[in-house]
Length: 301
Figure 1 (spheres, rainbow, N blue to C red):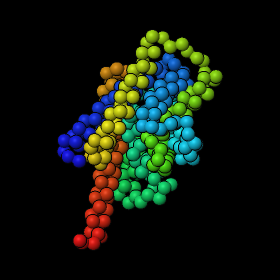
Figure 2: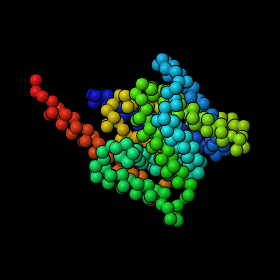
Figure 3: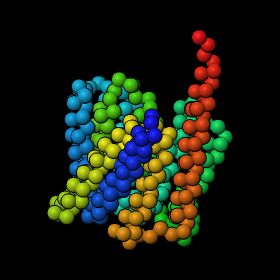
Figure 4: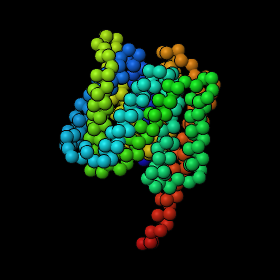
C-alpha cells in the first residue's frame, strides 16, 4: 500500500466512525418512543434488502443451504444478542458511555480467539486485555455511586458482537460478505418480529419515521465507508482509527443530548483506547516478525 492509499483509508475509517455515531444518535432518538422490536424489524428488513441486492450483484443467492452452517448460526445468534442489547443500552444510558465500553470490542475478540480458537496471545497482549477491561470497570463503576445497572447492557453487546466476529472467522471462504451480512440482519429482523406480540406497537410519527430513516441512511453509508477503508489502506494502519468513534459520540452526546461524560468515564475510555492501540501495535510487530522469519527460511535462489 502507498502512503496516499493509507491516508485515504484513514479518512474513510474516520468518516465511517462519524457516520456510525450519527446512526447511534438517530437510533437513540427512535428508542425513546418506539418499541425495541419495532426498531429492529424496520431497520433490519431494510438491511436485509440492501445486502441481498449486493449478494445478487455478486452472483450469489441468500436462500441457500449455507445459511444453516453451524458457524453462520452462531454468528447470527451473536448478532441478535448484541444488536438487541445495543438498542436497549442506547435508550437507557448516555451515548458516550455506550461508545466508551464498545471500544473494548477488539480486546474482547482477541481474548475470545485465544480462549476458544487456539490463537497465540503473548503476555503483553494479555496484560493489555486486562488493563482494557479495568478501564471498562472505570466507565461502568459497579458498586459505586455512579453505577447504572442498565450499563451492563453494553457488556452484553460486547459479548454478543464478540461472538459474531469470532464466528465470522470460521465461516467458509466461499460464502460472500454480503451473504453473511444479509443472514445476520435477517436473524435480527426475525427477533424483532418475535418481540412485537409482547410489546405495544406504536405507529411512528413523522419525527420518529425521519429518525429511523436517518439511522438507515447513515448506517448503510457507514458500512460502505468502513468496507472501503479496510480494502484501501493497510488494516494495521487503518484499524486504530476506529477509536475516533468515541470522539464523535462525546461531541454528539454533549451537543444534542446535553450528556457530559464525567472524569472517571473519560479516564476509563482513555485506558481502553490505550490498551487497544498497544494491542494493535503488538499484533503488527508480531506479523512483521513472522514475515521476516518466513523470508529468512526460504532458500536462496
